[in-house]
Length: 201
Image 1 (cartoon, rainbow, N blue to C red):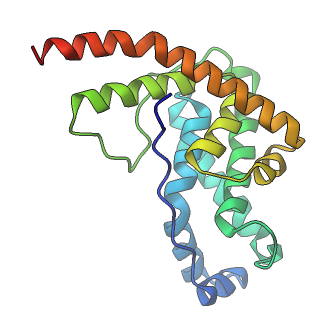
Image 2 (cartoon, rainbow, N blue to C red):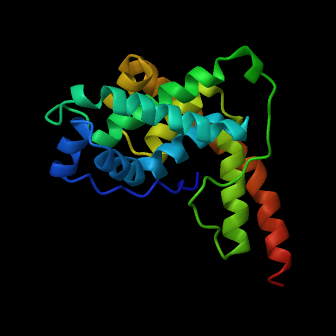
């Protein structure tokens, strides 16, 4: 299975700004949001898998409201980094949205998360679209584990904590998600390769 493009690592917020944000200073809050908005947005978008795209911005905002509310209690000496902790909150916000009855059956055309560049190569664009469609086709529970591991590179323990699962369930869902992704791409990519090959002859 082709490797997915992981979300670029965000440089940690400096300690002084973090302490000020924990004290409730608005300027530090803005710096924190600006620093981590990209990965939070990418995670929420992928977990919604193209459904109700108009809700993504609202859910990102809700994530940061929860983050800022809980930030004074967050312990920098704990096991999870600030970004992992924030992604945990974002994942729960997105999954709660997916559980709403009115979300059933809503499907939008998948699009790239904000801030991600379109590849110049047509082949890479088609591969990216195939991967995007394969991720969107996963059941919500499998997609959550897959996205947190493959795109955001969270450790298994952090994924288990974020999704309130035991470690074996995380590994089982990830294995099933990878198998489903592989099957989806093996079905999609040969046709793409044939079409692309015509332009090379």
